[in-house]
Figure 1: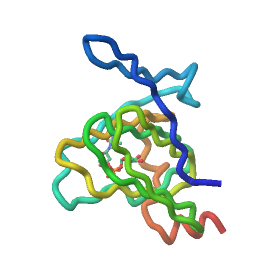
Figure 2 (figure 1 turned 180 degrees about the vertical axis):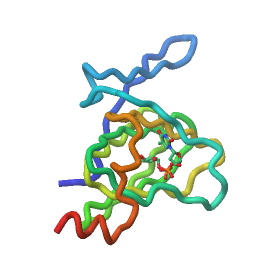
Figure 3 (figure 1 turned 90 degrees about the vertical axis):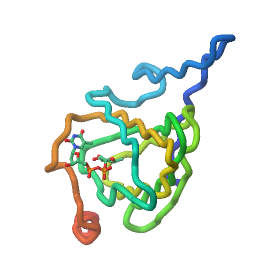
Figure 4 (figure 1 turned 45 degrees about the horizontal axis):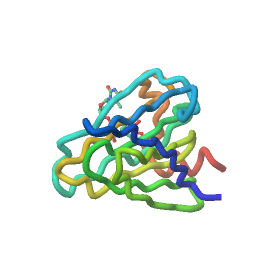
Length: 132
Ligand code: T46
């Protein structure tokens, strides 16, 4: 089974432009407790390099693009987030990395939990140990 779980958020377009809705009842499989976005990422900077114990998230590049890597400790897969209609569902206990941010990238993240540093596993060795 693929580690890359894409959720498609259709555009509701009309002659004024596009609107994309993300609603719990339909496309988002958790209650959204937090929203954040990452922007102005400097050239050649990568982010992430951690896993979460409880947190589930959906990441969407609402502008520009970036390359996401998802790793379950055994397999490693990558996907380009390059459309405001394309959400990546990141379940618990998955290592994630974000690379190759375009200059105009705005990465929006919908999160199932409030911010909690103790939910992060920031060492790959600890991540692997936790899975054993
Ligand atoms: C993730 C990927 C996709 C807060 O204070 N509140 C928040 O809601 C967040 C997300 C972060 N922070 C603080 C924690 C750090 O001191 O902001 C600083 C930067 O966070 P971090 O280094 O974890 O950022 P990324 O880009 O490596 O990871 C973020 C999320 O933290 C993470 O949950 O899955 O984006």
